[in-house]
Length: 211
Image (tube, rainbow, N blue to C red; front, top):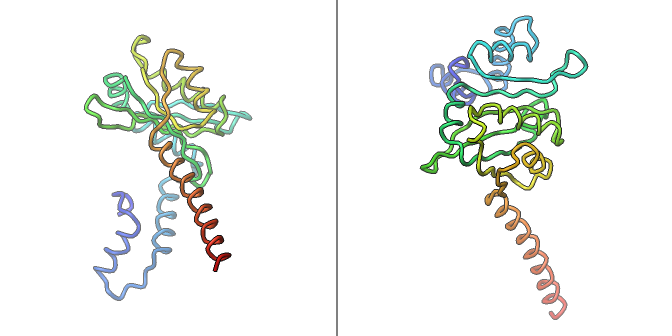
């Protein structure tokens, strides 16, 4: 079931349905999945196994190395995504996500927008850090996916990550960089909550003083 990309909780539910007296716990499921994946990898290191899978499934990928044997940054993209990137090349959304993997590496996610307003994942990159140098390298890899130099993105939407916005300006000189409305609304909502909470505390303290 793990090979078929079944989620751990669904694996546990299936086992319970087949055997009501099963003592299997979700922790045992995770341990079994880990052992299974290690057996598939064999003697290869995790990064070596990843490189083999990218090559096997014909992903376009680039990486940078530091200290001769340590991968610094890695970028990958499926061939079908390259076709979509060149067919729908007007608007792209780029966002960095943090602390979602065991290695605590920032994951740079590229998302394209079709003329009908639908979105599609284009490519991904694990970078060593959220510094301009790492992000510029990833954006240059992304730029290399475009078959025509006159068909680069017209608009790139990001959050207010200063390093990312600076990298976009360095790589895509003629591109318009817009801020994501979702992130703007999220920040405004958080600020409003804190201000309202402060005012409510002031009102409550004023009422309590008068009482």
